[in-house]
Image (tube, rainbow, N blue to C red):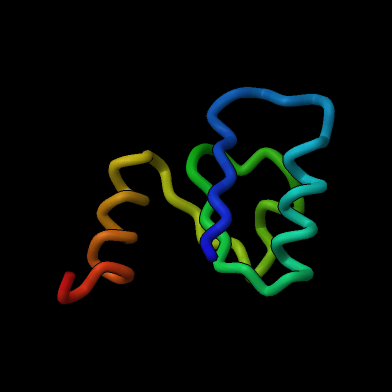
Length: 67
């Protein structure tokens, strides 16, 4: 499973960080697309990408080989 966190918009409720914490605890592959807005976005389990095109290229080249 892959958890993708989109931080392109400002969200002050903290709900997405709760989901991020759950993904970290469950050992999911975690990708962040957009700016780093929170200390938890820099967790060692989180891989950051600037744009959706960057993350899609990464997923295609690393998770869909030979398909």
